[in-house]
Length: 275
Image (cartoon, rainbow, N blue to C red; front, top):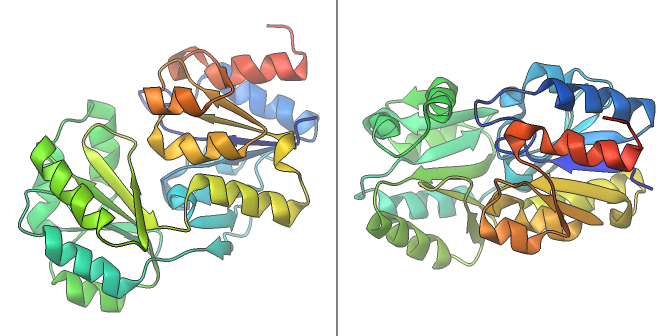
């Protein structure tokens, strides 16, 4: 029996336009009626998860920053966190700062971006809804990265947008040269970096342990490479029709696209709901 549902947001529970379909909204109600907990599992900070998800009674916990944080959504308390070492963050920044890339720092439930690099958000290859979301969610800073890292609390995730494959490869090499880091992606033009112990699959396992739920009794939905570990950790990993090949390969089953309410369609079958 399914007890926990873990779902990525962008490109999975949310449409490509960053909205929630009526069917997906209704399936949250169905989950609550059946005592099934719904866990948003995202690269976003908790402050960037839509309020209609966080306020829903089926939602008690959230996995944020690609698994670096597990939070109680009702109190906002961080229950589990795997932070990046700030010395390693600074070392990585110094190795890529001459590239035409962003360097986005997730800390204190914000995303900090150097003003000198903020303009790259306009020139990398992004859809209009994604660009608008990213632009609105950044906190621009003027001080050196060294000074910002002293001022902020724990750093749980980094994001780097690049323009060219050569820039991407340089960033990959820089990350891979530091064994304490891992990289993944959710867009064609970005690299997402966390501590090597922090990923969605590990967060799924941790929350299952906290709640006394076997991973066998979980289903997870995803569309991109940062969802692969989650799909493998779940009892039933489900890839969206719009998923990238790596995500499809890691899944047990497929559902329809995010724009076609794929999460709701799959859960409706599990819940025995007539559609």
